Amino acid sequence: GDSVTQMEGPVTLSEEAFLTINCTYTATGYPSLFWYVQYPGEGLQLLLKATKADDKGSNKGFEATYRKETTSFHLEKGSVQVSDSAVYFCALAGASKIIFGSGTRLSIRP
Amino acid sequence: DAGVTQSPTHLIKTRGQHVTLRCSPISGHKSVSWYQQVLGQGPQFIFQYYEKEERGRGNFPDRFSARQFPNYSSELNVNALLLGDSALYLCASSLGRGGLGDTQYFGPGTRLTVL
Image (cartoon, rainbow over all chains, first blue to last red; front, top):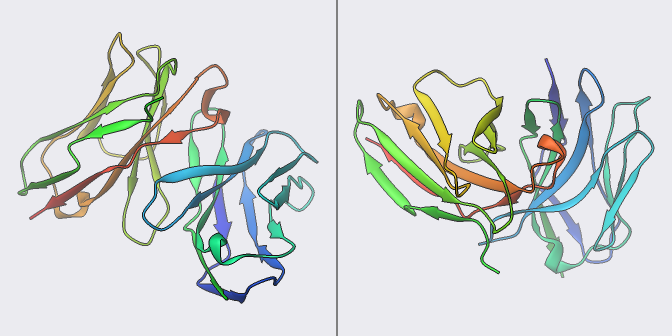
């Protein structure tokens, strides 16, 4: 069945470091892919999404490209800030199900 | 504009009891989805409803059921509660036209503890 495999955390980086959080998926058909984020004390919210192969989603300096050939949707940011500390979830939406990864906790040191 | 609201915030039940959780979507949204999130894990999809019809269902037993009302609000019902049902239950709303590929807007959740 469909699944999402996400890089395990926690991940700790220094401010201004480059960030990559890996996400790979297995799916039948052509799912939409998402990154959701949960900041401390807040609810889950959409960070970015891509609905078809080669689409790039971007928001708040974060980017992810829908790679069908490698079944991946890795999250990247060129220079992280302390305010990026949060839990990040990769997700896949098919015709009748949505599947979330287990989440990656990111901590940024000043 | 108000976001997705859920009630109650917290709930404590004992094994074998029944529970009803409620969700009100963002105004104009016609789809509601329910998720179970166990501590340290990602949300697990339970149901999606659109225009009062079930559109999607996750791998949950028949003890879990839901419905959507004409005003698009929704209830999640869980019968014969088990200890393993203890979790944060999240509701999300979306416009609904794009199915599960629509952006989901999440509520704050209901924390259910089963003793």
